[in-house]
Length: 368
Image (cartoon, rainbow, N blue to C red):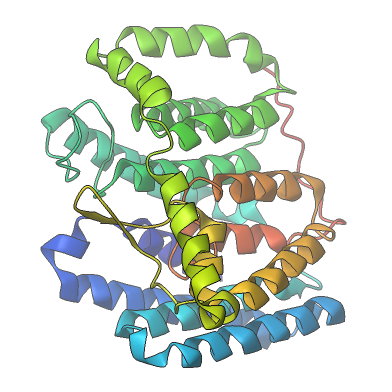
């Protein structure tokens, strides 16, 4: 099961990468493989017969599934082929979030070596592209870290997810290489210049480092890292934080609500999965908001049930998992990272939902 998680994380890290442009056929194949891997992972949990299901959660989830299908068939003609794959993957992930381990809880510590391998290779590849000036986000300056992705926001989101997993895995025995790795990840998020990424990575670092004495060394380490950054980094950062405004997000939200008010069918049943896109300066963009995107795709009925379902699962999870889930939900206000079938962030959200209140992590209070 844990080997399959390794495969799923690797496949999800390729989402939004250069393969989407270089080889669309291979990219489509990777999407199908991801769906198969996620479905297999869910079946393994069920076949192990050590699961339990909360009846109230399942009733709300089945209602959500029903209206998502109604929405999809209502917008049948407008949904593209990739949209149906995204819908089925989304249903599998929602089911994964509702299946609670009964005997052998999901244990993040068991993916320690896999996580270390994935993260080190991912960072090495990204920085090699960064140093060589061979990144694929050609519309940005060379000082923005975008790695193998077409957009630096995708890089920031995936780094953010890797930082959460790392914070859950670190313990006394592995602190000597995990803590420096986490600091590199946090610095890398700042290099992406994603404002949402920088904001929420600070929250994650405060949750993790807040009870550790290493918090005393963090300002010094950050200062050393920032000293070696190119001078253009600071002017670009100032531009991003003070001048860039909402990056069109408010316009997207206004357009969604304007369209809903003009069409009662669209208000209740949406426009169809993966059909929420906007035009800005000649580019086709997402809503940059997970909730607006879901509301636009599936309509008011599904959105209301989604809100109920999230509230129900947050009540049952272990405290630390809930904190990280809340950060992912908060990040979703600024990027379309949740409630999408093929995203590392939503997969992580569903894994965190599997941790019961009785589940206790080893204390992250490591001595320095």
